[in-house]
Image 1 (tube, rainbow, N blue to C red):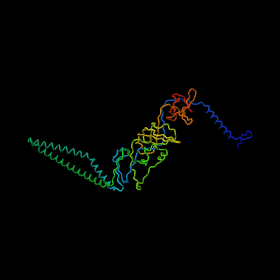
Image 2 (image 1 turned 135 degrees about the vertical axis):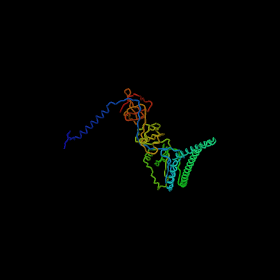
Image 3 (image 1 turned 60 degrees about the vertical axis):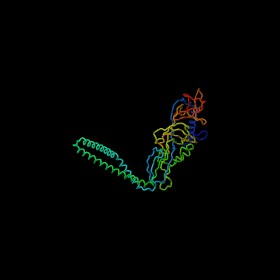
Image 4 (image 1 turned 90 degrees about the vertical axis):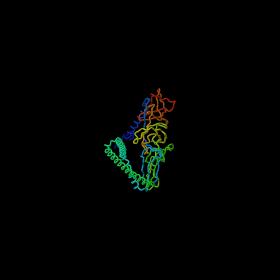
Length: 401
């Protein structure tokens, strides 16, 4: 075992010298910081765009509509379609309906459609019929003229042609009558089945104009743009964790939400950003990206910025791009702000007495200028002075901390 070094009658172990060396290195480092000359740069003029990535909660002007318990629904519109008020959206068949009647109705409608799909053939038949009528009139006129001129040597030929045309006319009339009777029978069957289903069928029309969607999460009638002025960070966290209500249709006495209509007007994104380095304020216009949902960059207006203890509540207002978020509530967004103006290195931004600013060297003197950061990226920041009496100009010498 090492006995160590004896100094002034006391044994000093090796780790003492290690500790002493660390103290000396730290002291020299502090001395170097104190006496190291500062770095300088110049105030430039430029433009940068900074981006924040965060999670957002979508708030739309929307309303969910329910219908009494049903056994079958037949929609006449598709999701994302713009519908007008009172437009037919769907036919609902109440629970307990006779599904065989529905099958018979569909089969009958299919037969009618198949028949109507052959209208081209019917049009050809009608065209032939008109041509035959013209030919008959022409031959009759020719026969009358021949009799008048006493030219009877071609009468037999004319009579054979006329007889053939009359036979062809009768054949077409018989087919048209047969087809007409068949179509009448199909229409009668359809009407009879419709009457039987009438007591089970409910037509659903659009109660208002807007974009229709069938994706519901239960918040449609709870959070609306009318509540946006009072929205809090606590509400954001609660609604963000909300899970759509799964109704057991067979064992539920509640009316089942069938669809929602979204008014394609203003919509909002609420987000709580986990820091306070927000460089935009109410009224600013930002750029918005919604990765995975839209390839477009959407223009957004800052509706509200509320600085909290360790985070920031941000509410953005949009008037475009709602089609990409019709069926989703929680989204990932990228918020971008572009700023143009005086530009300094990001490391030149300092905090002094709870104020943000830069140090400017002028004529050998260094002064602190309070500034507002308008945009910040990795290496550069766009700034503007807070106080009118301060002097901050292009090409000023700025001290880098």
